[in-house]
Image 1 (cartoon, rainbow, N blue to C red):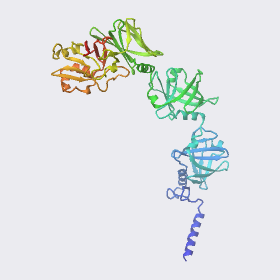
Image 2: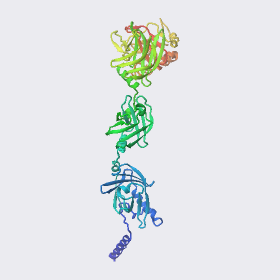
Image 3: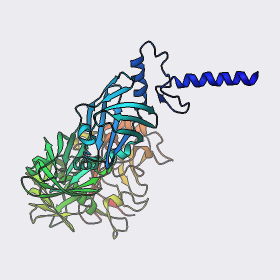
Image 4: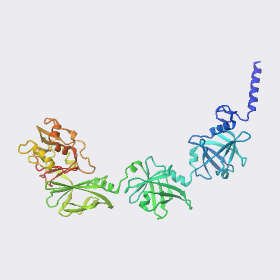
Length: 536
């Protein structure tokens, strides 16, 4: 009896399956045997189409592959929009079209690609789906009655099919994030391509600001790729806006100007280089810094007396001059540009120490101030140590340990007018106590006691490439004497501000060990001059 029941059950199941034109595979989505959306009887055609489109939809890195004889076609479907992308070995250019779905009298889903070039490529543009699985779709071409099996495959296969324009565009997009391309000209031109938006940003060492434009790539009549730049800085630099590809590899593209015939080599550049584009002025000033001539001293050629000091700032390519005579400071700031190689030319001549200066010429072994007369000379900023024989660059002299420098004391200071009144309030013995103390690497002032204000420590050379000094207010006071720096700040606020809130040019008054010491502010006309070195 049990065997009879099993036989009847199997027979009923066979009848049911025989009555169905489709089958169900429990491991794969199958069209239309797997009912994914409930009862199909209410809207059978819609549900059949939905089942097929669920199969058609792929992940972003997958496509459908169709092979017929020696032709391969790739399709990627955007089911929500009713569109698809296509490439083929016949036409490797990526194109996009719309597709249509319907159900025929035999309840088969029909996919129509009318308007595309599938008819030309395969001989069919309408396909009747007979079986649809996740891994493959079987269909029949309505025009040719050819049976096709579409296979799901990696999108990289389709992407590997490229026209020459697409290959060049893919290369343009292949830079590291934040990187770009460069063509070396007198002033190198940089390019950042957005291949999705078809936009390009161009800039150069002469004009580091972004210039936004557009570009296009087409195949010309000779089968070569042409790049057309619209509103680019490159056109301003070269009077050319159409470039023709002559050769390329993964790191460079060689172009030829369509109108001027000039060859240009475009190479990849990193984000670091893109972020650090330097103007010719910045490049030349950096060379001055490297040679130690970001600052210098103008002295009298006859006696070596100090006349002026210059220093250069890179970002605004400005040359700053400070001159001194008869207790008066004169400041001149002049913007400079590179108009010929190796020369930083002033926007207008300026008069310094009786000379009309027009430029700084940078040489391999130093610099020349163009216009400096024979009565003056340009020298480095140096100073003698306490032994009267050792010479140091000022940036090194300022950091000599205790006892390395002479002291400057035992004489009245000469100060700018804004500091003089406070200096005269310092309790006097033979003269007010305000000294440069090389033994303690301190500046000493007398309030209710001796205050040894330490100037050594971090943050000693704040201006790049120069020997301009900032005293370190965080270094504090030498122990054992005055203990509260606020006493100096409250009693002598202008002197305190000059010492610790401003940057300083420090220079000896002439080239002998017995020369006095000037300390000038670079942001005001304040200064202190200690006239008498003490070597004991």
